[in-house]
Every structure is written in structure tokens, then in C-alpha cells.
Image (cartoon, rainbow, N blue to C red; front, top):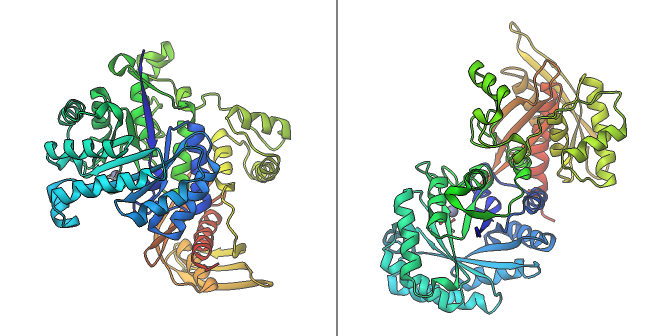
Length: 508
Ligand code: KIV
Ligand code: ZN
């Protein structure tokens, strides 16, 4: 029988802490619910002690998720462990995750602790966490640059102190598949009580080897694989969940492992993360890139038409990519609309259906055919309900190649009473003019870091999806907007980012 492998998703912790990927509470809850649908075994919901916002997100996720374990990260310090427990204690299946570095370089320069002190602290803090929670993970940060003999001693001690999972992070993405295979094998053989805990691996992608290293470790006996959706994470990111899972599923003879992920939820999860973080997936990205199942060359098209397996090693349906792209239009009724959403795997409440149907009708008025990709974008953009201090009322843009672009934007401000604010600005092009008019209207202090626009489907009436990232102090807020008019999508995305910033930064 295949060996069971546990998937630990850290999109909401290691992924979220990477530049430009921060999410607010509602967005994190939406991601956690989707990870549950994907059937990940463990959701690392955050680092509870790091900020009151992180604490609240971990707590809300712990209280809402029912079918996955919910973990919170903690340094090996009592105050971190207390906060983690406070945040996860109401989960159906809570876990405290404690980490401490074990490599000479981290112990000397970062921790300023001797190896013996590290060993003692690790033991003591795992025992401290164990008084709260039965499920304790211990991570030896920078394990792959640690001295193996020391690593074995630390793992043995923390298992004795109550750790149920020992994690071997390749924190700086330094190892290689053969080397990592040996390390995991050696840990199994040299840690006398290793059979009493799961062995986990957590690989970063600095050399582009995170997935290969993770798979090598799984073959060597690791039972928990840590990863993120789309591989988001610090620096070059973490091992991508979709790549690990599809490699295991597609090559059963190579791996003979049992992962209980619902792979048909992979594409939707990937799109959700990319839409919330405003970080597009590169077209040639394995599994979830827009070209991953496209066959452009004549020879390939011919082969696939004759027999799919000539050039397709997995089916598009297996990751949730529907080839049956049924189209809806302005004459489509509520039944057809609802049926299509069910076929696409969406299970909406009546309120959500009502709201999305209104937006579908508005879109169908502007766009002859509404494709599945349009519906998915409508659903992703409905999503996050934060109070909107500003709403776009109207705008006018005057532009051309021989004149200076001018924009006039009118916003509705929701304060005690509704107020209309209209501002005019010139700019270096129509978007710049419109954004400057919005800035004048809201008067807040932030800088624009990034702006992108992409078309959801083909055709001149395609939906445009705009993303902006704005910076306020240390925080970056992602805004998104969608419309068949690219200027409108852009202004909506800017106003959305500003609303998020105000929502997060206004004291309650
Ligand atoms: O990369 C790393 O070492 C980590 C640990 C905290 C598990 O993210
Ligand atoms: Zn990491």
C-alpha cells in the first residue's frame, strides 16, 4: 500500500510574508477556506506573535477551518508559544510550530548562542508548548547547513520532549536532491526515536530546486511536505504545492505515495492566490501557467488530436481546467448561470448567487459572450467585503498623442454623511492623470509601487483585470479592479487599494 504523505501549506505564513503578498483578514479567511476545499492536511495560518493582525487572522482561521489542522509559527520563546496557543486553541485540530536555527552560521551571528544553549532551548520550548497542545512541530531552521551530528541530537531531544513532527528546512534553498535524499535517510537512521515523529521538509527555491528537493526527501522517507500555492514565498519562493502533488500523482511508480489532495481544486486555488496578491503566474509555469496545457505547434496539435497522451502527461481536467468552455450571454437565465457555476465547482450561498448574477447581467450587457474565465474573475472580484470609504462615482479622461492627458474623477466618500469629491489632474498618460486625480481626492500619504493590467479572455470586448500595489510605510496593499473598460478597471483597482489601506490603518 502507498505511504501516506501529508501536505502542509504555508501560503498564509511563509508565502504571505514575502514582498507584495500581504493579505488582509478577509482575504486570508477566503484562502483558508479554499485550502480546506483543496484538502490540504495542515494550514499554517500565520505567525501569531508577529502583529495583532496576524494573531487575529490565525485565530479566525482556527475557528473557521474544520477539516485541516491549523498551525501557528512561534520562535522558541514562551511569549511566542503563548500567543500561538491563544490563537489556535479553538481549532478542531490545533498545532504549535516552534522553530530555532541549528546551523553554525545562524547560531553564531543571529542567535549568538552556543550549540549546547540551542539544544537546551529547543528541548525546553517544545516541552513548554506540549503543556498546551498535543501536536507540536519543531523546525531546525537552516537544517541543511547544520552539522548532521548536531541536528540528530536536537531532533532526538525534541522528540523526547514531545515533538510530533520534526521539520528539516532548507531555509536558504542551498541543498540538492541527492544531498537532501541522503540527509533525510540519515536522520531516519541516526535519530534513535525518529519513528515516533513525522519527518517534514520545507524547501526554498533559491537554486530552482525546491520541488526536486522536496520530492527527493519524500522518496527518502519524509512524510510531511511543506509548500505554498504558486510557490510564493521569501526571495525565490517555496516549493510549489501544485508541482509536488501533480508529480506524485502523475508518476505513481516513481513515488508510490498517497496524497489526499483534491487536485481538481488546484487551478482555482492558484487563481485565487494570484488574484488576491496581485502576483500573476508566469504563462509557462508548470501545472497552473496559462500555457501549461496549450498546444501551439502544428505537430503537437496534430498529435493531441489523434491521441491526447502523445503530448499530455496529465489531463487538464485533473487540475480543474475545464475544456468544456460553455458560454453564457445576455439572454442566459438564472438557471443556466447557476448550473454553470455548479459545474465549475462553486457552491455559493443564495446571497452570493444573487449578487454575482447581477454582476453577470451587467457584464453580459457589455460583452457578447461570457466565458468560464470571466465567471471566475467575477467570483474572485466579488470576494472580499471590507468597508469601502471611497467608491468610484464617475470619471472622464481626455487623452491623445498630441495633448496632455487630463482626468477628472468623482468619488463618493462614506463618512458620517455621503460626500462627493471631484478632482482634476493632468498626467503622463491617461492612467497617471486618473491616479493623480484620485490621490488629490483622497489626500492620503502613499506611493504607487506597481500597476499591471491584463485581459481575462481574448477579443476587443474582453474583461480587463487591473492590479495596483501601493506602499504606506512598511505595508504594501494590493488593489484590483475589473471592467470591460481598462481605464475603469485601473481606477477601480486604485480605489480598492486605498480602501484596503484605510481599513487596515484606521484604529478601531
Ligand atoms: O524557511 C524556514 O526555515 C522557515 C522555518 C520557520 C520553518 O520558514
Ligand atoms: Zn521558509
